[in-house]
Amino acid sequence: MATTTRPNPPASQYETLVIAEPTFEKEHLDAFMEKFEQQLTRYGGKLHRTTEWGKRRLSYEIKKHAEGYYFLVEFEGTGDLVKKSDNYLNLQTNLLRHLTVTKPKARKTLPTPPAA
Image (cartoon, rainbow, N blue to C red; front, side):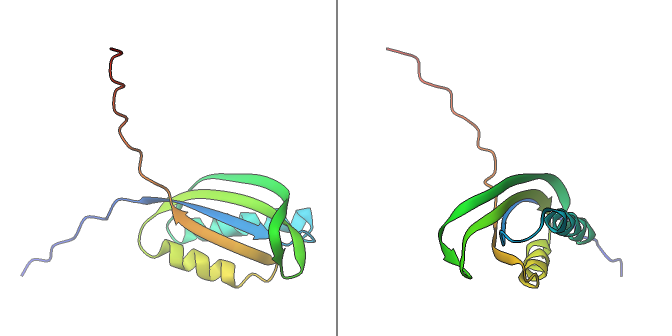
């Protein structure tokens, strides 16, 4: 009996917002983000962009911190990439919060109606 292979599902687009403790030194932040990017590619993801937003004031205190250091990571992947990356981020002690969301697919824009 012949085995059939299923085609790989299309990759989904994701964004992860990471908030690190403000006391985290710049060198350690850069090393952490580089390691996270390596983890994403190791898990089969494709990194698009990492944007450093810098230190910002939080809406409310988290772990007795009023500020946090923000990063936005945009990537694509399939399978349980998000679960694996969330597990990796959960193990990091210097992070205040992180959140991964699926980016909306690009919508076709409708033409504007002609002026009457």
